[in-house]
Image (cartoon, rainbow, N blue to C red; front, side):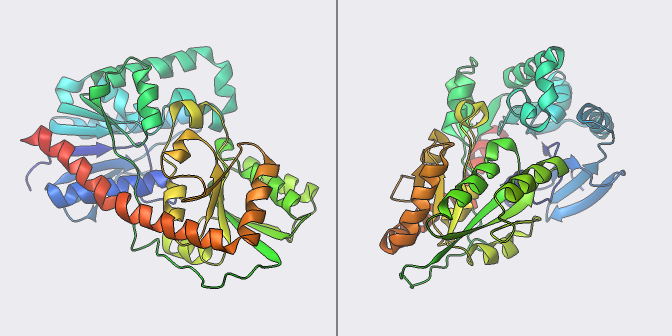
Length: 391
């Protein structure tokens, strides 16, 4: 078999319930249709190296990341990665973080002709939300930022899904022409549209949150808002997602504090097809992103909002620039003041008592997704980038 010209390397497990996995698979599918023999190198879910064909023309190499903390897991992965890259040189290597990317960036000429750095988030911003003690380790924070800067400098092209992130990178002295924005997308075959023709007011309201339980997601705020909304209408909240035991414990304490065991349920992640079935059983989806440096300064492209917009179920979300990139208040979704439970409650009541508004929102949201955000559009933009390099 002819050696691959392209390697897409990510310190992530693929497939997995996370949005990163969805994004990676969409990009890899696009590349596999346009180019032959793409190598996908990711983290093994086990303690051994595994080889398989994830898609036609895509050889996936899963490398162990063994250790009792993040640093040890990164070093373990990097050691395996070095061995895989021995005596190989790709035309293009595509990285998603410094964890896999830094050793490639500092030896770029050895491993590839062209380096693409896909910036969805940087550890210097994000890591403290997962590991709060990181903030106190100034040496580690300095090393993270230095490795980020080297990767950004060595990359021939930077891809990011958000214009907010592009502005953040420009403020880090990255030239604008070096940055290409390719927003996230939606698989319209999975996230199908369903909208009930029933526009009558109801006496109860079923709200859904799905995603991780990271602090910047604001799941706790959704619980506070449901407690407040319950004073006006019977409001229930279903939470579907992945979190660490202490995060789940924190949420359960809040639920117990409000005595809402019957109104709030926490469930584990499900497949995308199963998630869509659950979405269609609810009256609205909430995305209570918090106004912190991760969401406001670094930026993101909230995949859950895009996927929700496709389903025929209305969304209420935090009024942040990264959300406004995707649509307009009262046209595609309802926005609330960040961190305000009263503002969330007000939007819940609007959806409950203004059924015509709901019909307008879901129709406009689906049209927006169909016109601008299928994964096929993101894939075509990615292929153009690669074709310009490979000619």
